[in-house]
Length: 363
Image (cartoon, rainbow, N blue to C red):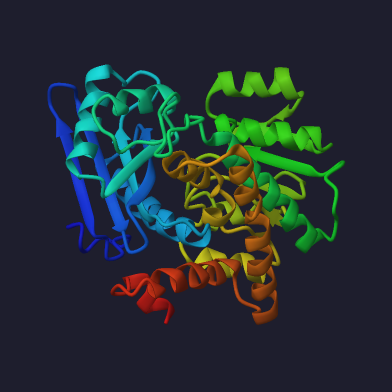
């Protein structure tokens, strides 16, 4: 199947397949849309079973970044990169430098940042070969200030704020004391979110495919640990997906009972139709690219310069955006996913460039 015929191809501006035989690098960079500004999106490293899986992920993720930056009010487009490989055993300086070279070759059309499977060390390695990277500690921003590095705490803050707004809307409660939350994925963002929830008095159930992450959650948070396959069916009030995408699908919805779904994972809906299913089931879904925008907000300020207070205030605005989406969805009796898409694409379209395939579908 060609890229242009791929079901997740959405008028992407550029898709680059990166291969460096010497280091073993195999990667894909997708630039979805640059109408609002250069495409900014993280670089993910994951042991995809097939190259087809990697292509599907990067096409969907890059489109999500366009929508995310739009609703976050940022002068950025959407892009993403994926490296095919095990993030624990497959990295080398040569591989990371090769990836940095490919990013540099795009001349600033794509700006990278940390994502699942990458972090500060990888961003530092990229920064040795390209200027088009954010999220590396000790990097100087355009105004001369020093970037803070890891954006995951800001992502977690945004999810926390958005989750709180979702329970107000769906459960009619303003506090989190005793709230039962199941968190899928205890990486940087999942753990940071869990800490905030624990401090607010929530009860936690967690899972992760990596034993070290599970052990850390047990030791630090006294969280209840369940098997990954059991996380969906728990009798909880909030399900917080903070791992990989596509986890809201026909199979998981057979057992998922939580009335609120609010988490950091990208591309949570396996298909667009799942959003309508959730709406019919009266399960309130916080659109992923809205609630998890804290990280992109953080790295945006690292790029242009800004104070911690400015970042914090902008991230907390995610709650207001979600409130508008929830209220519009309720008034019109349509899925939150559709409302979020429409709001995001309105801003992209207002930039005065040709519309994307998604815009034509929503017209």
